[in-house]
Length: 182
Image (tube, rainbow, N blue to C red; front, side, top):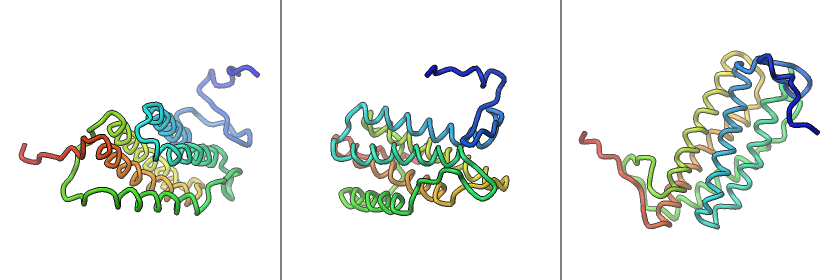
């Protein structure tokens, strides 16, 4: 199978179910941002930050494929493909709780930074927040989106923040505190 089809040469792309949209549409921007987030998590995994978080990141990458497929398969009654389940949100919450319990209490704002993997996790968090905004924008335009998608992205950004702190603490760097005296 060839990787190029030439069907996108005029600014349109296909969704699951044969519908075609402009590559500039909000829906394409939403699942494109989810794809960008997934790629950023792949970069984090390439750094091998802490082996204990790799299974979590693997699970996230697979779940993000489900999120992207759900966004790429809209119908008037919901997505053609809606593989994201409630337990995946629960798993994010459990990972947040267990990793946060190993960290000192957060008493001030922190700057994105620290170790390279920690910084990459902070960066992934910002991409996740953008993906969430794009999905909410779809909903604001009365497009059909699974409610699990918004909840998953919201919880995922929280987990990425906690994992950034966890990786930084594990590398001996700790949080980069915001100096608000400037």
